Every structure is written in structure tokens, then in C-alpha cells.
Length: 135
Image (cartoon, rainbow, N blue to C red; front, side, top):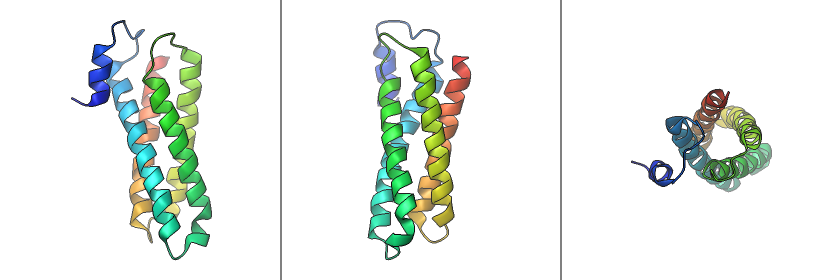
């Protein structure tokens, strides 16, 4: 059982009808994506062609920030605000789409971009799946 799942299990109140499995998956995907985007940005900075990767680096860092924020917001349940949660999830899914697209443009030449693009796609899907359960 993951730490996110364990922490959700220990929450002393009901989660207000949120699909616990989708929530756990989304939190884990956000944390994983934030790490992958941060590492990809760092790897891009070390490439010989760093000038060509400026947009990729910026997109990676923006996506990492949004994923980290989303994972943190999803980990808090006291005083839950469904509208805020929806907005954060939508922003995260959008950032993941943008970053995944940008990294995919460089995936043929940079393995770190290929991996990051895949992680971004998974995170965007997890956000979309959780959004669908929120109604």
C-alpha cells in the first residue's frame, strides 16, 4: 500500500463521496509527474542543445509546480471545496497536456523527454478520471 493510500485510510472523517481509488491514483500521479518534470528540466539544462530546449524547460517547471500543488491540495480534506478541487485538477491536466506535447517534440533525441511525456500523459489522465468522479 502506498503512503498516499495509507494516509487516506487514516483520515478520521468521510471523504465526502470522493472515489478513494481515483483520489489515491491522482495524488501519486501528481507526485510522480512533479519529480519527472523537475528531473527533465534539469537534464535539459545539461544538454548541448540547451538553447533549443528553453520552452521545454519552462513547460517542465510550470508542470512540476502545478502537479506538486495539485498533489498537496488533493491530500487535504478538512473544509473540502469541490470548486477549488475541480479548478486545480483542470489546471494540472492542462499543464500535463502542454508539457507532454512539448516533451514529445524532443523525445526522439532525448530519452528524459520521452519518459517525461509519458508520465505527463498518465498524470493528465489521472486528473481527468478524478474530475469525472467529482460530477
